[in-house]
Length: 507
Image (tube, rainbow, N blue to C red; front, top):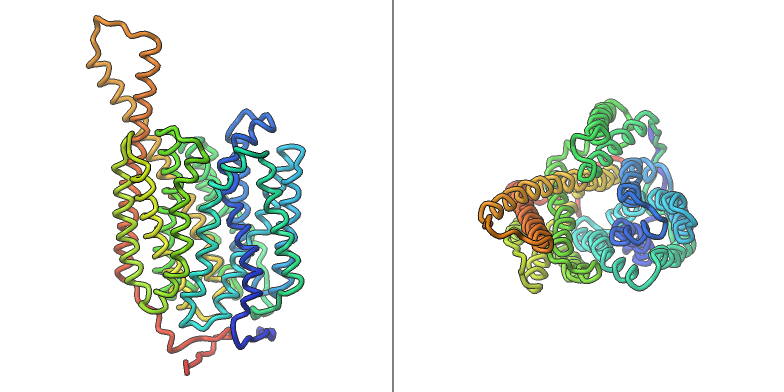
């Protein structure tokens, strides 16, 4: 029989320790989007001709994270909190240092991969510590603070990156994070304690292999679809292999006594519903983060830093609202927040579908910010309610599955909507060009300059139509989440299971 190792208990939440974990999780989430704006500068610095090559700095980071996150449940269950976080942060520091002083693109890519390996367990550790440090009836407020890190860090990444690249060398992006990561490591050595309960879990090597093939194949295939095209072998081939690997992985988890990722968490209806809503919402959120900058930069011609600034109010609103929605969740429950938040998100997404070539800055910023407000009201309350349905012993598996599902759903949703955008743009470009040619006077021959201007106008209008059409598709996706949210029920916390599975009556 499994033996649960003793774990330190607290009369009140260990706020200093949680703050140390927050710093580590913040830099990990920040790294997710920090390089997006800097990729052209890195191409110039290392004389890279192909954009798909430099894109591996972003795709590779996501792939490594997506592959390793499913193993976080095993690692958190098997190993003590303090050494696990210290090792993860040490790996992250090594990767950051390597990237900061990389003499070549190969070293930079290796540094990013090492960073991702270290960052993969940071957020799951923080989430699990917060779940066990706060009573169930106060988890909403606690998880709201976690949402502050999860949402704010990646949202400010492009703005910060744009400003740094405009004024400094790209390496400053890593040199800026390095001292923060080192500080977090030193604080962890000094103040971190073992909070999470452990037991002698066993690792199934085949499950790791299948997880890597399954999640890695899906993430890679859908992430490269927008650039390589759906007909490319590297896209449909890796998606097919990934789907087979994932199916095998799922079947195996149900047959193992100690699964790598315990998918029995989906036998808890509240968790299963929360997971589906979160995945659908991730599709809407990540696609919006791609389509809005595409409009601002490609259609309006606004510089990257200014474009990032336009997105900043939405990020700030999400950061402010995360702790507030946590308190509202503790008081009112998840359903009303989810319904109101998804209604706001749907209406704002429809509003973005009415963007014009000359839409005012105020309109763009306002509608985008309102959309982010709606998303901030839904994401963490839904996730918290789902995790509340699980016994403590399944918390590591619940948090690992949440992070993995959101990454995969975000990648798939973004790829599909970018494909919709590209397809509609090409169709509209052909239609607009045909209309212009039909209406043109055959007696007047246009100059080369006039032809170039006409082509630019055609592409500008076609891209605008493609983006707005994609926003209407995204709005339909949020409607699906809204319908599902109507079935959400607040988890009954009068009975709870402790780590070993025994039921505890709430006093």
